[in-house]
Image (cartoon, rainbow, N blue to C red):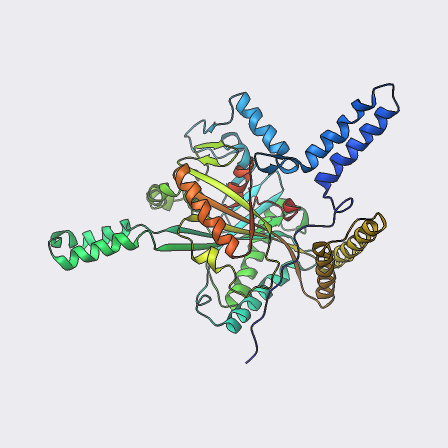
Length: 488
């Protein structure tokens, strides 16, 4: 019997633009140095020229309310600007079933939910990004109870299902998997018990004990739902003579890619439903945005108008109010985190179990995977190795010390180059965690639990301060996800 595998993650930081500094840090420093050089060539006092390096250093390395200024400057200015003109709170202007960009908040602007007449599935069209997206509901069984070797085999099969997406000239921009968990209330089971006449036996001690057990276990009973969203780039779709519009060709390509991915996932041992209809997508978006509306949304989806496919699909929120530390959507508060650092130690196949299975709050774990064609991945790996070697050589020549983390990054880049040479596919990825609660107090408590669970998984979570509305949108099956380059 073979031994279980250990999985390694490379350092998420990319090669620096200058002396290991990222572009967000290097550009302000360079501009500050240029300002100083120009000031020294003028009659101005030299102290005036020092303003440039001082401001550049503050922008590159400073922090505001615990967050790096380089990351939060633009969204923070936008947020406080809207607050100054009293436009921070967005309210839906009408209730006429309109879901165009005119009645959607800025975070959702440009999105459109459509259902093609010749295809039985819902499509999210992003006019701003030029993409179309479809979602699949996926279920797996037995992974937590399987042995380590069996888990490795399952992961290998799932990886093989994703590999074809990284082929040359693939129209797929990215694939997003989202695992949403929420406590299951006892309301549905209570209604069933009432229907069978349990309310007439309340004096029976056994019945009373059973009902007490149901109420006690309800908060600890967690439901998990996994959606896989496939996003197609219209610019990568090959034109078809039988179709006059680029949108029609993109929808056909989206249906084909989704169907083939579902077939490969089923061959890997997963249960995959057909692509979600527009009604199912709208329900998922509304429930994940405001979980307290689940009963109302369920009633609407079972209505006669929904069954007849009459009327517009209501999927947008009623109220959105972004803040520095959260975003308020309808009657729910959301706080989002990005995975700033992945495990730097070897981990087993079930290394995420603490975060995925041991938390009892409402949260969504999202992973955005961008397939990289083999040729481009090999060239990028070669450039990264050369860039890291050049950074190390430059630091040594200038008298700077090359620390252990930088040496590990070089070793990771060389290992990546070696794996690509063996034919492995490459995906760039970014991880996000969105926490949802009905009050700010509950949100703080739940976020504490999530942060501790993530730390046990060796994940470094950083809040998306001033950008929680973007994190909320990225946790929905809309195809508008934060790009993998967002973490650099």
